[in-house]
Image (cartoon, rainbow, N blue to C red; front, side):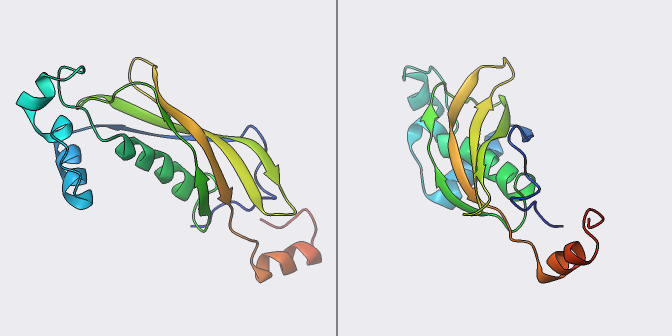
Length: 155
């Protein structure tokens, strides 16, 4: 499986990934990262917060964006260079989150792609938004040779 090169990507291209956040996801993320903030893992504590119940780690949702960037657009072989993010709404256990990336601009000469990144919940509310800068995979020597031998037929 290969990701797209900057030449194959077009402004306006988009991709998505959806997942329902489970209690296991939150506990696993807390265990892997060491982020044991009680707003995520303690029912009584979280019940006294402004949210009224436990919330998922914001970075967990950013991980869904990373999934889309690394597996779909630009995809395998791409390098994540930069990510900005604003958290707009909490994500709760049981929410279905859809991470979406959309190509805003590309720079063929520098092999860079800038994408809008955002997540929505099942009510279509934006929970976080930002932008990513990616370096897509480069065309392999074999792909370049194929293209030079038969322009328009490579694929």
